[in-house]
Image: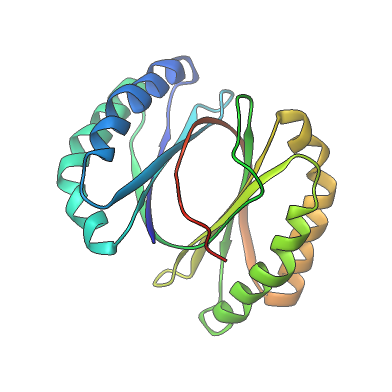
Length: 206
């Protein structure tokens, strides 16, 4: 499975228009394309940052979709008054305890792997970090996207509510620190988001 993320740092006052555009226009068009699996949208209402992630059955399908999706990305950037930044990923891990509902939130962690430790880092995520995340109250799901060429990864954990996400911060920090110590991974950034569109539809990948 493969994924493409589009990040826009926009004007917070434009977020509702951007969310509506992605939900009502981009998602139906995307889901009509060959190989499309789903779409999610994360939003930070304070900063104006939005991250739309599409999932694809094959790398060829993801690449073939770009020509048709490019004008939609540009339109989303115009609506939200920001410049779209695009990254492509291998979707290596997806685990759901249950599907998210209204009010769900996400914590995203961006990491950099040393190429020599990437495989051991991925094993640590699957067999140590993921089981620990699953024990957090309000846990819905967790995913791991990896760009092997750049040595980058993004882990996203979804919670039932903002209260559950906030209550998990201390324990999540400890889990993250354990992973950093044992795998040599550099944590680049951590951010929390509203889950505005929840249709990524990746299958179970562990």
